[in-house]
Image (cartoon, rainbow, N blue to C red; front, top):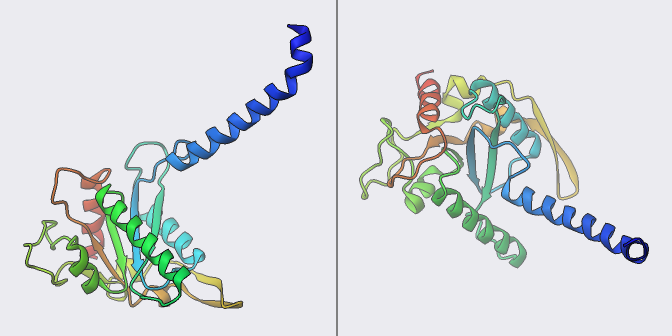
Length: 215
C-alpha cells in the first residue's frame, strides 16, 4: 500500500479536487449550497434592470417581508426576464428566446409570486397569469389588467421605499440614475394558480400583497 500510494497519490489528490469542483458546480446549480428565498419577484421587461436596482429591491422587500420558511433569514430574489424587443441581432434574439423559456419555467414551477412588468397588458395576453383583486384567477376570456396590477408610482408602499441610486455601463459609458425614477412607470402584480401547485408560503405572500395594496 505504501508503494502504491507513492506512485498514485497525485492521481488520488487530483481526483478528490475534481470531485469537489463537480459537487460544488452541481450543488450551486441545484441550489443546495444556498438558503432558499422566502419569496421571489419576476421582472419582465424589454430592458434589463441594473444590478444596483435589483440589489436595492431585494433588500427593501426583505425588510418589508418576513422569514416565511423559518431558516432564520429573510431572503428575496428578483429574477429578470427580458423579452418583447424582437431584435434583428441574432445573439440578442437568442438571449431573449432563452429568457422567455426561463420565464415559462418560472411560471410552471411556481417560483415567483410577484411580477414587475413594463407592459402588463402584453404579459396578461401571453400568459393570463395575473390574479384579480381578490386573488382569484380571471375568466379565460378576461385579458384585462384592471384591478390586477399597481402602478409603482401610485403605490405609497412601493414608491416610498428607500432604494437609492444605480450605476451601470451602457454601450461603454457609465450611466447613473435614481432607482425610484427608473421603477416609477413599471407595474406590480401577483400571480394566480389554476392548478394545485403553489409557490412557497402562498398565504404569507398574499398577506404581503394585501399590505402593499391597502397602503
